Image (cartoon, rainbow, N blue to C red):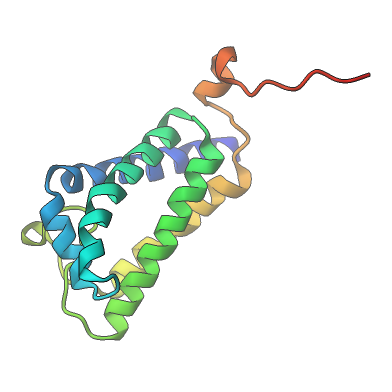
Length: 156
């Protein structure tokens, strides 16, 4: 199981880092993608476009290197739950929009559809496996003693 969790960490971490790069470079385009979902008030889309990619980047990086893997995986799992919900909403209401997941609308591989729902649900489940089964194997925290949590001295 530890190898499966490692692969899951690397896959989810790499996808989150990859997905964040274009959004960090072009937050205006990402803000438009957020606005297209018609879920958040328009004024909030700029704040979301400026902060969400950095959260994705940090969480992905933490998963790749094995830093605070459970909290990072909890964060990616929560984000994926929100992403799946937003895509389901867009699909159910018939919005003809790009998902805004991995780049600009011009580079899109199609509109929001069942394939996006299935893909993100699968990613959600993989991320959930990390939350449930990660034991810290192959992590920087385990390899470097100064990063480990310190236990409180016993009061005996």
